[in-house]
Length: 441
Image (cartoon, rainbow, N blue to C red; front, side, top):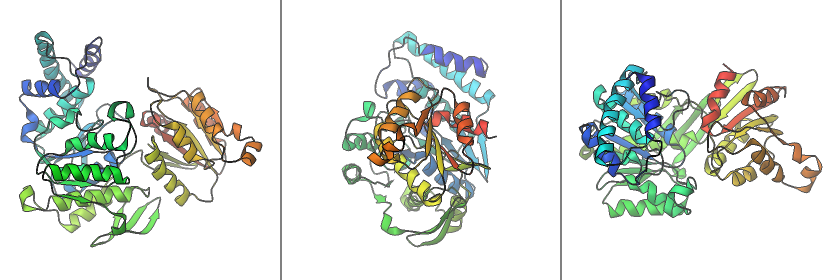
């Protein structure tokens, strides 16, 4: 099969299939493929927000040291093939269509065998994970930075047994339908990637989540470290990036804007420091490699300026914790400017909480319906935003007109562009951000 035939077949094979919860199907799939993941070394990354940025910093640091660093990204935003890649010596290489066709052909032959034996049908994400493991083994990666898709304990990526370090970014309320409706339940799912005697690094905003993760580390005999705000001092933060101090490191620089990126960079530093230990079996990164890696890291769609005239900023803030970090940066970098927004979210997100947080940050908000079955209708989001006027005076000033539902992305962008001298912010579900890049290309 060629690439298109294989990807279409993956979608068809799911129709009518009964999904088996747990990791048994993934383990069986990988066993029949020869367990290519068994010969790889992983940094496993879980958490609610910041996984992609933290993984970008980690990958960039080790690539700066000359390592070939495989990386599994979820979800893909700009290209179907961007989820599977490697970085080395300043270059990022994506899996090719020819390679992907080869991996999928091998996987689908095994899936047919599993169907005949009644072993269950892998999900599309499990098949994509299997393809990633085949690619990383094929490329002979020195290290793989592996992001979970959702949760951790029952995530398809959690079949790995050769984790060098587990990294857990801030845990917050999200995916409650699948992970639990309390922060402790969600943290327990994320803690599922913690393996016995494997080092762990974390950064947590919620004390209950931090306690749950620390308890799991003690239970499994793991050494762990945590990024603490008291160890961070921001020297300067602009749209060109941030200069900051962290512990013994002075005047570190990152190019990715957004105040929240500093925590992600510090988490990457903690990971590198944890792997300095002789027992980890990795050559330590030098301070120069850490500095160059942090400065060179890039991650699209996270408080990224994609146009200067007008100024357009995109961000993947799609849950309350992510919205909090996003709004801090909005109000820091653009305190006095007029601000308009284009926003779209999924229906399973806590959009009521996000609407309350947004308040009157933006003079006008144009809502859109993301291209997904999980999408919240633009009309419903606009209604909720308009209902969250902060005070009666604001309501008297036609706060009900502050959010306007749009039928198409291009309509929302066209309307936002009419606000001359305003900064345009496009945020929410990652699923529609590509449309913004295409529009302002």
